Amino acid sequence: MPERHYFTIIKDGELYRAYWRGMDPDYAGDQHTGHAGETVHYAESRDGHDWTFPKLNLHQVGGTLANNVILANQPPFLTNFTPFLDTRPGVSKEERYKALAGYPGPGDKRGLKESGRGLFAFVSSDGIHWKKTKEVIPYQPEWRHAFDSQNVAFWSEVEKQYVCYFRTWTEPGRLRSISRTTSVDFENWTKPIPMNPNLPGEHLYTNQTHPYFRAPHIYIALPTRFVPHRGESNPGQAMDNNATDILFLTTRAGSATYDRVFREPLIRPGLDPARWRNRSNYVALNVVPTGPSEMSIYHRSGDRYALRIDGFASAHAGTDTGELVTRPLRFQGDELHLNFSTSAAGAIQVELQDESGTAIPGFTLNDCPMIYGDKIDSIVRWKNQPKLSTIVGKPIRMRFVMRECDLFSFRFQEDQE
Image 1 (cartoon, rainbow, N blue to C red):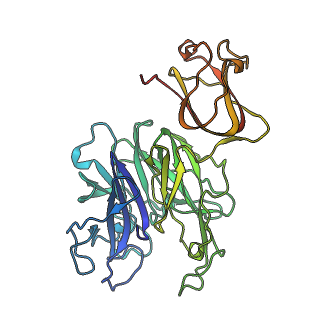
Image 2: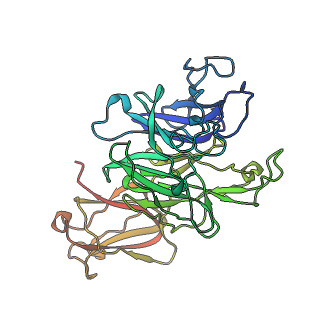
Image 3: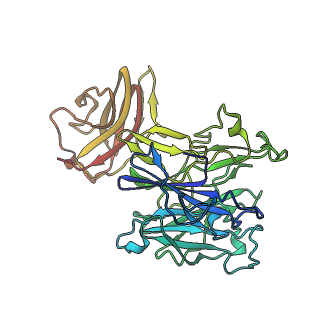
């Protein structure tokens, strides 16, 4: 795919949809943020690997209607148009797709003071033909907004409400950061809560927060970290030498904080000198599955990063045997599933303990045969096949004993047979 700005990937059933900001090559006016030459482009795919660019005949751009432009001539809204698939139960077919867009910054030439400077809603039945409705998140100076980034929204099946994450600024240090607001109807939104996951001196651009498709109670975020005076200048921009990379953050449904366990970047600029130029590292909103064992992150350069399912991080054991014991937890389901990878000589075993740390009869380490291999979804079996139903709902600890092994995830679920 070509290079793109403020990029979104949506997986709708078997169809992948891509949206990004472009520009009319014939536009000769002022190129301030939110200018009249900005456009929104569209592509689609059946596998997330190979993409088609349909000729939609909707807008004349570059002197032709034979293009993949879905929105044009709507300044300043196309600078950060960010769509999502509305999965709320009962949502009308006409509003199955929604988007937020708007820009209140100094480049906005409408001369507005307050009303009209906030985020506006767009709706669509098919993800291609869009209608702007009204301002839904008004601009409030005391919120310290900076809407000139992707303002990401989604329906949270866990929270039973819409959630929006967007750019604000920290009070001390004036760093670009992230705030959160919610709505039950996509029209009336709560006062934003600053989440401020920044480390000292750290600017965070596009936050790309969204529910993880395998665990919707966990939201993952892939913000761009902006580091002033560290990159190479773009041609003709001698003073614009800032470097960027991609971080990995998580937060839970309903939480007002991000988890910064992993402080180093997930994606570095790399060997390509172009990746060290100003604002050159952004990834698309949404990590999506692109195969039975693969998920993908899309970079603005056109590159695709493939990861193992659940492969953001792992509990790792080397040649020396290692153990991991969880906090007490309660579960539902009658099967324990693991996503793991061992070496030829490695293995993993699982013991279930009561709240005090005593092994539960039938679920001891000796009852669990050595498990080895490389599986995205493997069911743990104990000798004599004891039923997990006997301890469902009770507080337990899980003890993993591993050697030359990575444990990516575990989950309890109902028997699918």
